[in-house]
Every structure is written in C-alpha cells, then in structure tokens.
Length: 273
Image (cartoon, rainbow, N blue to C red; front, top):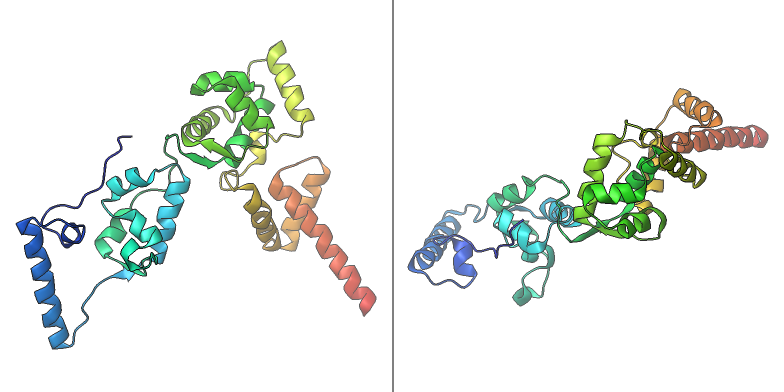
C-alpha cells in the first residue's frame, strides 16, 4: 500500500481551510461565505453537516484492522486526525459534525484487514494458528506459507502476545480460510503436531463461528454470555447435551453453562416459595 499525504483538491473550502491561498480556493471560501450569509438572511439552515460519531467509530475500526492514519486519510481524502482528535486550534475536541461527502467516503471503506506492519489484536490469529495445528499443520509450516519467521507464529500460538502485525494476521486468515476443512496429510510430524495441540486444549476450526473467532479475549466472554442468554430452553438443552458429549465449542460451552444456571435459578425459586 502506498503511503500518501492527504491534500484536498484545489478549489474546495477544505483546501482553503488547510492553509492554501490558491485563487480557486480563495474564491471557494468567498462563495461559501456569501451563500452562508444569504441562508442566514432567509432564516434557512446554514449547514448540511451530519453526526460525526458513527463515522469516527468506523474510522477507529479501520485503524484497528491495520490501516495507518496517513493511508486512511489518503484513501478517504479527509482529515481523519481532526475527526478523531479534533483541531489543535480548537482545544482538540473531536468533531461533533462532519461534511456528508467526507462521511460517505469514510463509511464506504470496508472493514477488512489490510496487510501492513501496523499492530492489530492477535486473538483471531492465535485461534486460527491453533486450529490449524489441531488439523496437523505445524506452526513452522504455517510460518513458511505466509512468509513469517517460525518464532513469530510459534510465539503467537503459545505466548501471551496481544498484538500481531496486520500483514501476518492477513496471511494467517487467508491460510485458515483455505485449509480449515482440509486435515494435514497423515505423517509422523502432523500426528505429533495434532497430538500436542489437542493436549494443550486448542480448538479445531469447527469449534469457531466465523463471527466469533476474531473477538478480542476481553470481549469474547461477554459476547458468548449475551448469546447464551438469548437462547430459548430447547437451544440451551441442546448445548448442554452437546457439551456432555465432548463438544468444546465456545458457544456450546456458554449455552451449557447457561442451562445449568437456569436450572439453579429454578431450584432456588421453588425453595423460596
């Protein structure tokens, strides 16, 4: 990805406000001022700005997926820094409203991981590496496939690391998407890898729902609890039975725990009555 310094097009108000005094930009400022004064005189709204909060949250999400600030500003052609932190000459308060054109450009950028050297949350990458190990793919082999060092992937799988470079996260994600349902060929090495992974309690790919695997550790438990509480009694019973048969999928385990909790609540209510 090429890093570009964002700059507004000449002939726009944003370019003038950025300090440019090109005649086209000066005229854009004068035109804006004249239009605004007319609207005030007519008693009409002077702005079409929109709420900046959802745009700001989208920008934060993009940064968490590996985007750099400069790259994001170049892509959106908007001052993301001001959106996030406010203008330095305005007590650095985040914007409350934003130009609708800028808002649409920022919101149109998809929430997809980008392969940069910026650090992103490692939880999803760790779970994918571990799941592939359960299938027999050693961490060293996975590292070769994505162009990373063996230590990078090995430490990601077994260490307490909380962050990983986005380029490795993208590589691991793509490798996982290709192999999640393809067990490694049966060899002595793959058997050892699989045995060690199972002994460590690592989960296979089928244990992870696609919309859960990337939740940060701090948020996963809360999300599982929320989903379990939304289950009806029949779903909770199915989770309990599946867990009793050895299914260690996080959502199944959460549902089984909720089932037991509901049973305890009912016993307590009967006793109190």
